[in-house]
Image (cartoon, rainbow, N blue to C red; front, side):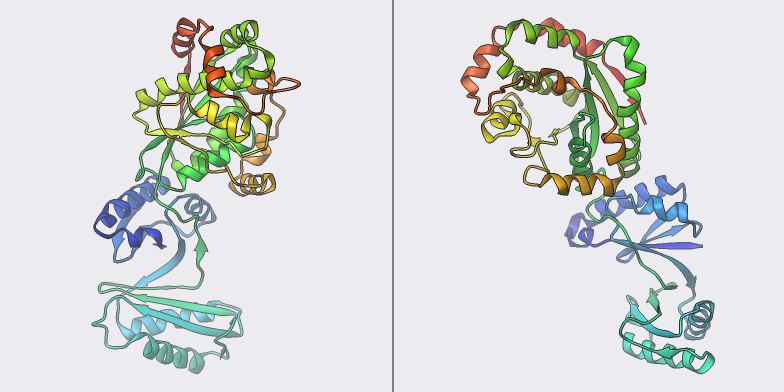
Length: 376
């Protein structure tokens, strides 16, 4: 049994194309625990035709579409018999043939193959040809060493294979937005490391941690290997409440998050952060406040949802399977620090002035020391 995997964007990578292809081959092989190999412009996987394997492939970035196929020798008589067997298995009353060949030495071109195979099916079945929206389309691809016959193309998520664009650190809040932001970077080839800050005590930790772990498990379908750092933040929040006016607390808190996460970023060899910010969604996400927060970062901060509508983000979360987990009630650190009348146009100078009054150095070190690492 074989699965034929096609990609699109990888084909534009010029001299770097083998690197992208080999990474995708490795990711597919690992995900399916099966042998995968590069062919010209596609990947062949030796794996069973199953719903489970199809679901796995639908979650691997880099795949444009894939098909469960039959593989035969590139000889006309064998191809004709295979195409006929596939047509007879179908209950469709109309059909068309869609042939292509990467082996230009094959004695028939695509149009000739369409005609020859179409006439053969017509002669041995009661089906009739219909070129526009037929009941059955039989696809044929001819390579130098083998030919592939299949009837369906299942869509993948496209993009680039995870592992081709470096590593980023995602500040995972537990809400709807940050998991979608993480997925967006995975789809562009990034490996994502997750960092979550919590402000509950050790007794409540086990039950509340489960939601965050479930989010990472759902996202792990896209990159197959994930790390989650759980960082305690209760002591730092207490310090903030003591010394920072309510209207500025959430901004300084988010700056401290980036500073702590930066240590993890360096430890992991990552190249930047990813956050679920969206302009104007909440008070801390005005342009001025986003600028005040990101100023604390010494590495790039990527915010792929920045211009999306909330409904678009919800639909994306539903599509990738994180929405139901994200809406489970959960009070994260940000919720705890939201003021009744928060600052909406913070000046970086003012924020840094307030931040300088905090003696947080040792607490940051302690938070990192007490951080838990879970690998998926």
